[in-house]
Length: 300
Ligand SMILES: [Zn+2]
Image 1 (tube, rainbow, N blue to C red):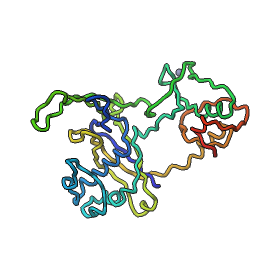
Image 2: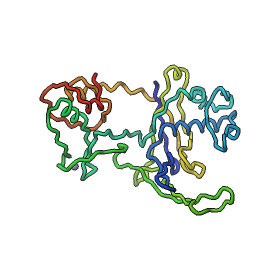
Image 3: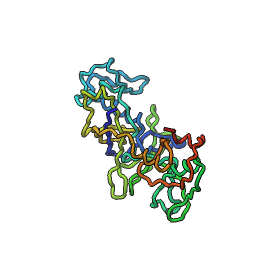
Image 4: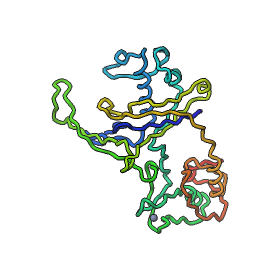
């Protein structure tokens, strides 16, 4: 697969996913799921396609954006979208996360007292103490305080998601007046990531099969797509950039480091690349397989 980096810069507040928290309250997600990203791009391609009639393709009043080159031809497609249009079903998208951040692994712990203290990934330590049944693990922060599990995205230092609640009243379709029980609130995301209003970015990847990529270029610059719900009232406008990047090499260095620390030839399936690893002392080379560690690792 050839990788293209997809960068989305929100130009307005957004409501991604339209997740219903309770009754009439909806809250945005803090990332763009791959299917939402794929749907937004399909919509962008078809809305600018001269041969696609949105009204004619609608079913039961719902607009539909299915790219089917057998149904409509390439004539009428904007030039820069032609490779996308012709091969859309073969393209794979990843989730677009804040600044391309990874999720904390389930074995990552941080200080209970001070969130500024460095997080540590304990996977190798758990593995060694359980798998080799040796050593005792000291689960404490370097400051001596207790640890708690970390979850969510590894946002870059000083950045976070800003949300704002807006309340709206839905109009009765027939009488065009507001009615009881039609009040709803939306918790929408803001297009910046800190108090200095540094722009928020969502970063994901497009994966294109080698056979398709040979004669095609999927780069896109200065394009605007609409992502999420309520885009008709001005939410979800995002700038789109797509550029080719070198494919990540096989993570040999990460695996070699794991094998040095764990003392055997296992291969971790889930490990943070950048965090320091806590290690319990290895006193033996007992290779008994435990089902608990087998869930996190794979023998190699
Ligand atoms: Zn601490």
